[in-house]
View (cartoon, rainbow, N blue to C red):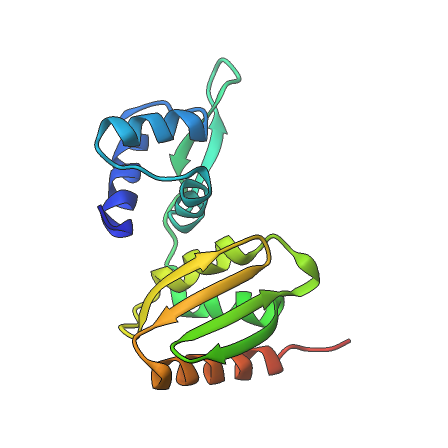
Length: 157
């Protein structure tokens, strides 16, 4: 199951179930044949704009936040501008480090996964470092140049 199918399933599961924890969500996903890690689910929840709300008993469960028009590329550019320290192209990959050891790499990876860029094959994220895998070295250079230009737009006070 690819990430788009998994995210669609997550959306359907929160619509039909009162899911209180990521562990419950993982178990439901597994029962539907989708294996994922907690980090992946966390990234999916962020990408889908899912949040927790309390019910009448004070217990919190996941719901889809009201939809606002989301410009994913703008959201990604803002995240790069505000949170990225370095961008380095290495052959067909781009290594991105977030600033000040922030645990932002998984969120940034989710934003990159969500944009419509056929050159991006996938992402792998740690705590503060993200690897973007692209189709070839030229695509990696283009992506790195694009991201570096955004980082340079950062306002220094």
